[in-house]
Length: 322
Ligand code: NDP
Image (cartoon, rainbow, N blue to C red):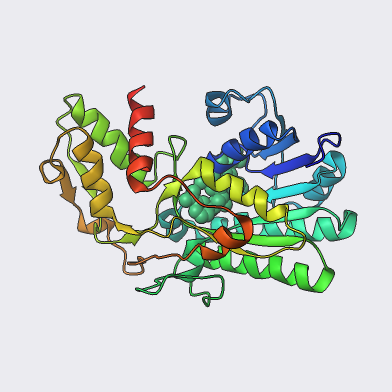
């Protein structure tokens, strides 16, 4: 990046896990950072505060499902890059709130693409796709060419918004691309996600709590990485000469049982003594196996995650202990 020209980034969903890490990363690259939240901007933003950047970013309260608001936002902030991260981001929640999930992902994305098309086609757009777009991969890891096969309202919304992103790239020559990110965690992961639930319970049990942690299917297999490393990949995708989609993952998948086991092992505890399996948490459409091949990102973006599952767990536990 030319240090004399200060770039401007607009992060939709800046107060979430990825938005906060991305904001910190872009500030370190000397960007001017704008970001949206649905909440009042006078409210405390715990993630931004915990990274010590709440006062360094320009927060805007915007309803992204309203096209006029999105257009006004883009005209007002004149960004070089837009990162579309705002979403109802929980797969399990998407079964209870399918309409809100689809709206938050598909409508906000089409609003951004349409506003970019109308206002300034030089703006680069990143869309936060997901491993959920591929559904159950079986033993063959997903690549950028794997057919979409979502099996939740969340996955369907992400797949649709990805196709819209591709369509605007191809039809209107907009620099728009999708990052298919596989699961990535950190201490900023919301409490309702299973990894955060495990870490928090595990830490409490290590301090003497007698609670039992209720979980669903421990055989599900996922690829877990470290969120701060993944946001750099988002940025790298927008620094390319032309837009391309990428799988972002560690390339190593593990069972939820092994996540639980490693977490309890950290404290010298045996997971079986503290876990209850609750059949009500099982979903018929649960993806059993999710595997990724991030080779293209390694070759083209020169991006490779350093942290594997053990480091992710250690990082989350150590932060919680603090
Ligand atoms: P978070 O849930 O931490 O953050 C998403 C943000 O979106 C929230 O902080 C919230 O901001 C906003 N939001 C929530 N619900 C809605 C809604 N109904 N309408 C509009 N905005 C909403 O997610 P992450 O930071 O972990 O993920 C960032 C993006 O990447 C998301 O789109 C997610 O689906 C996707 N993704 C994440 C993966 C992961 O493992 N973390 C994996 C693959 C994809 P506020 O309340 O301030 O408005």
